[in-house]
Amino acid sequence: MRQLTLASASFDKHSKQTRRAKFLAEMDQVVPWRELCAVVEPFYPRAGNGRPPIGLERMLRLHFLQHWFNLSDPAAEEALYDSLSMRRFVGIDLGREPVPDETTILNFRHLLERHDLGKPLFDRVNEHLASRGLKVAGGTIVDATIIAAPSSTKNEAKARDPEMHQTRKGQQWYFGMKLHIGVDSKTKLIHSMETTANVHDAKLLGGLLHGDETRVYGDQAYRGQKDVIRDHAPNAKDFTNRRYRHRGVVDEVERGKNRTKSKVRAKVEHPFLVIKRVFGFAKVRYRGLAKNTQRLSVSCGLTNLFIVRHRLLRA
Image (tube, rainbow, N blue to C red; front, top):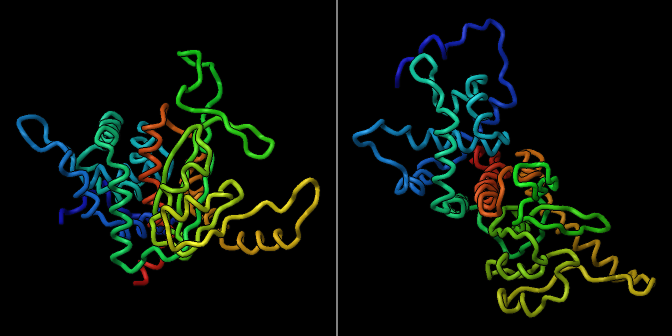
């Protein structure tokens, strides 16, 4: 282990571990760094005649910081210069080396996008959690959320993102894309995800099931999909919400059943809360569906680690 320089040494008489430092210390322990680096390593540049590349794990740590704190490439560089806890997490000592610049951060992100490594990273996280005993159980909750995109045309192209679409939720119209997830009803872990721009939620139902379900929960957007559930999960029962109001007449029995189902279905909101409120991904950062899908794939894996981090630390 290298000796710390004065740039990393602290001479503060009074100090306190901040929530950011505590969070980074927890995630440092629960993220399977070796397994995730193995996913990216075959595509990462190797040392040759030119300038040696920055360490893969360091760049992956920096990339995850961007997800956790919703940082752009320039903002990530600035944050590392500004925050000692972030530098310690990434492993940078300003007394020996500078922070990777925004172009280096951008190139690493493009490398992940170019080789479509978001989904393999997500799958590897789930394999790691399964090896720790956090396996998916018999129930799956399916749902979708809207990730907003700028609707303004005050840009260089004088147009909105052509890959985004508007959709209606209730009586309100939104412009952006959708994230569809399948969540385990016991652990609240995301086991499958899809992204679309203008596709009805029910059409994605089959791809959100892992096949071994005994129950499938969903809101009324997924009603009437018994044949799809039977084809993709033969042993599953349909526990999606049903319509309880018809021509102004309320079926109180069906309404009560929906309330009971919704007590389980509400668990799907926890992963959405982490992605959109804790990690700040309520709006798209990039143009196009592919780049944002790449980011959402990694975010779903990091969300799973965030949800069960205390359980992993106790173990």
